[in-house]
Length: 165
Image 1 (cartoon, one colour):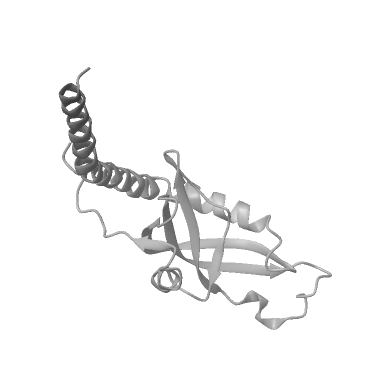
Image 2 (image 1 turned 90 degrees about the vertical axis):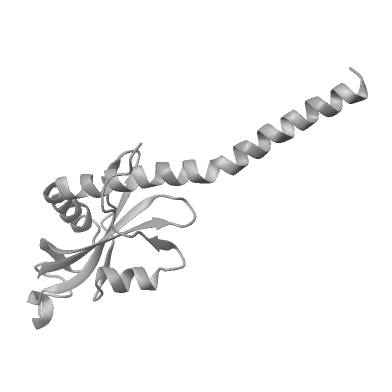
């Protein structure tokens, strides 16, 4: 190959690389929007199952010490976000939690055990489905939880309708 042929071949490769770079961001964003719409819809349709799963996982955590999880009531407030580092979607859900003291435990004689506790339950969307580790941020709602973790999570604006593909 002559020098001119090399130059033409190289410019073609650079041009293709430039085109791929220019179109990568809009394509990625379109894919993210489709995922966000799918995830929000899935969360709403699986809400009851997710609430039971959350109660089960959180109840097995042993936290707070000396308390047994009785019930978790999901509120209407849900804030969706994307992890800035991993790109995974998350949901912060307003919850009311009821506990009872474990007989013989440290909390048995504490009068406040029966008080309903507010918090934000955390869920994650991975490989097309919602899951939870039972993590609860007590005494905050979803908006405040997102504000506290703004360095880690970017709030999503509510999707009005699915993107046209």
